Image 1: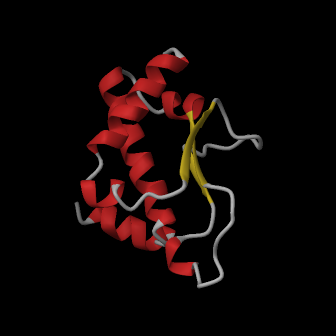
Image 2: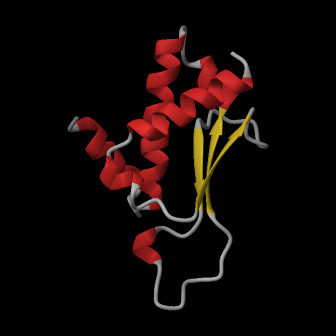
Length: 113
């Protein structure tokens, strides 16, 4: 899949997120990289200070960053519909980290869907 087609799916996935989440994403960049620097099976990565951990002195900082790893995502799917679903799921997972949920909490939420 071309990078442009992948980016288009990411933009569409962001629009499909629940409005309550979209409206609370402030100062967050979504970045697409081919693969993580260290060879791993990471599909996405959140870098920043989760909302739950921000205090009164938080400010004047670079945007939080969510990176999606295109090549790794493509390794897990067979067609464009699966790409769309996985991108959405990875975005939702990494946005969960932005809101301050840890891996266990995210897994519990995912299992309850």
